Image (tube, rainbow over all chains, first blue to last red; front, side, top):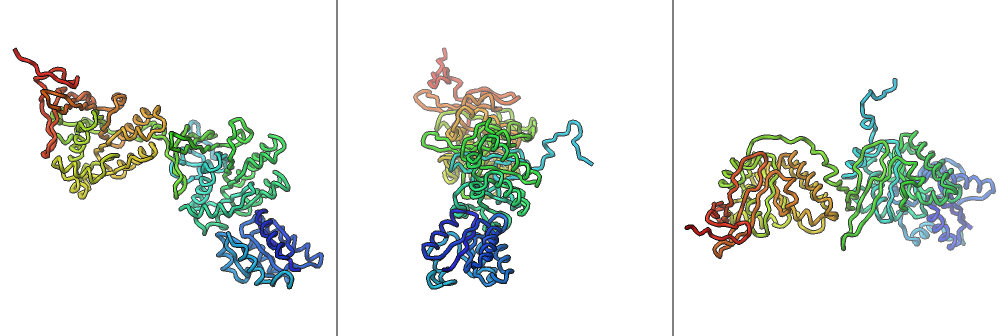
Length: 128
Length: 478
């Protein structure tokens, strides 16, 4: 089963996206900012787990989405993990940095669009 | 070396200000918020707190500042962004760069107030913020176990913000009382409200506390437009002292009617305010039209009216033998028409003063004060409003006022009375000078004759008695 890490300082957004992905059959990890996201990734690595996709907001305390993406790209085991940036006004930052973000979704977005993007990047939950 | 104020030097003037850039609000605050201070913005949901805070944030960024907006509420920022995007001050380019939005709700719920302070302290430093806006103060209070915890939360937040030179704005939808722990801690309290006047709703703003700074106290009206908040300080509060002493002079200004100038011993005193009183249709506007007809490019005039549209006014002038169109084209005359629909008294007053200042006009006709009266939601303040308005107009140059409002006679410099008089089965227009500032005048009762040749004044009541009763009788000579 594929694991997706959802990162946003608004817990409601994390929960809503998380439940939608779980309904699709994905395993979901949650984090409230970039620093916590890195902690989750370290924890998964310690348990020999892996993350297949990261979905992150841009504006967050401690570490924003761009800083998180750069930190992820420097780690050998995570350098190829696709990252989706979900953002309102900062979506252009994602589009300007294709080496960091595999896809960008403008908030507010349709869940169908999110699921389609996820499936395009890592395939359906049951087959991935 | 410490730069201490010298004896008698006003410390207030040395305080650094954060200009809000919100029209009228900086006037209330006497220059803006005090840098490094903390303020509560309170008002029920929908009162305009969020718009005020975000407008201030974007304006602050325009001035080179950096803003951190943190919410303690569970609501998502996305809906807010969508709404803000409809307002003209919103600039998407600034988001995530000079303005950072973050949610501290989860931190508050999971780790408590101390953790929120820690988080925000770190973010102020990381973002190099000069303005911190915290939305949802009520949630902080709910999370506090005692009032002391709330005080401690605000105190710590204030301390960290002030240390970093960051101004703090706390938003709350509850109506906190003056003796609440929150109010006692902060430096200022801005309250937003809304009242119903008949079917009309009027928004009001009040500075309930301004520590260490003078401010325009009391209630002031404001409105929310696509450009955000616009505050209209009460005219009598803003102009409690005219901006200058005016120029006291013995010079005269022509009224536009030769005979009247003769009776006035040369014309109206320059820089004076004249009230023309009389019933509807008696010829007040015609008298004012003649007054404006004497405008020149060197001494331009302004018609500030509510009833006659510019087109109708031009026709009216034409009927009196005056060409307003030509005067306008030459720059000798300006017409500012205000529709008499819903408006705010202080907005209209401020607009009048702005026009007089910008256009540098030397004579103004206001037609009429009655329209101002209709805009007032609190008639009790009208006399003070007019006193301040006229004081400021005098300071700017002087004006001509036209309206039925006898209680204003003590405020104005000159008083002209107009009325209808029935004489020998004929209705005549009467004009009489009741008062002229520091001047002699002829107190004769005059008949005003309006024709296509203009306005003429004739001493027509010499043979009549009881003229001011409205029904005159011819004196029978023996």
